[in-house]
Length: 346
Length: 93
Image 1 (cartoon, chains in turn cyan, yellow):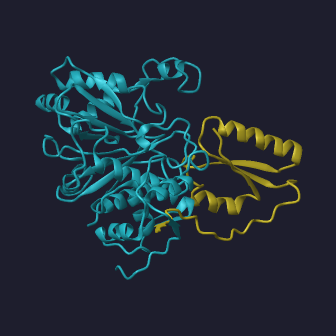
Image 2: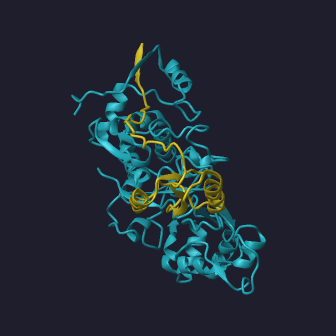
Image 3: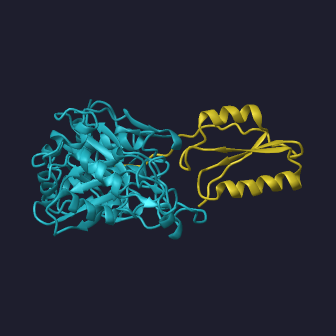
């Protein structure tokens, strides 16, 4: 494979320091220094995934963009990925190019979505993708570089640059990188990828266009209903309330144990959340979320926050201590973009 | 000295054949492509009204995309071919 030439344009620079400044000056970075994408590093990245440089990873039809392995590898090097992360980056890129994810919306929208990437299966442990303490925080190389690589592909290959194609009004810090694994070792429940049709020994990434995580507290209750009642009260008015996006629930150690001890499965959690996050038409109209004048019966007519319980993706992850968990609203609406799971090919 | 590789790529260029523009809207059938955002139907209805009252369009008919972030789906495009002469499409927040 090493005989296959890399076709990207080459730029001569004096040394690594100049390379970093050069990349930034070209508008190729996310504002942080990048690893200079040399031929050797890019080749190692491709070899780790056994991909020829010209292989098309994905085609984004609405934008007429072909994403080749070579471009993914260059951006993965720049993001600081170790070569063994390349297959996970590739799977995530396949995910955001899937018609169900619908790139043109979350890749451009004023809504400012990040690409939430949930890693499941053996690769999460092999790559040391953090699923525990300080889940969304700094310090975890795989978490920070895999998502960064995907965002750089969006910027440099798909053209989602802030202020031009990318018109995010606010954005959020997860747009730098937004990667977590599920704590499959300690979770009492089937992992997300198994619920979505894969075998436990398969490795997957699930991508969802998403807002920032919303943390909630419940330090009082010792029952699933108690913890989830707090969650639902926090969550009921969140995201694009009328859009019915999908959601991810991230249940951390204490809440995970409390909810499991009370006998709740993931399906029970989804059903409870679906039933307790609905809003009355009257409230939605009074708060200028639903159009139209108040009508008789609006106090009792309910609109679900999500289309169905299946639109709540439940993930066990986060530190063992602390009675906190989080919910993450998807971008916009399920109608516009859906979570997509792809197997990591190795 | 060292060499680094360019991480960018541009969309491939392709020729787009534009439909011939009518010289006048007199008697034309106008399709309005609604993008599902709040009030986009009301805005397009007003535009359609102006095209009929001031420019002599024969009729307007509204079509609804699946959502704002995708092109009009194939069924719409097929019907458009058969039933209208010009269309109004756009996106706005």
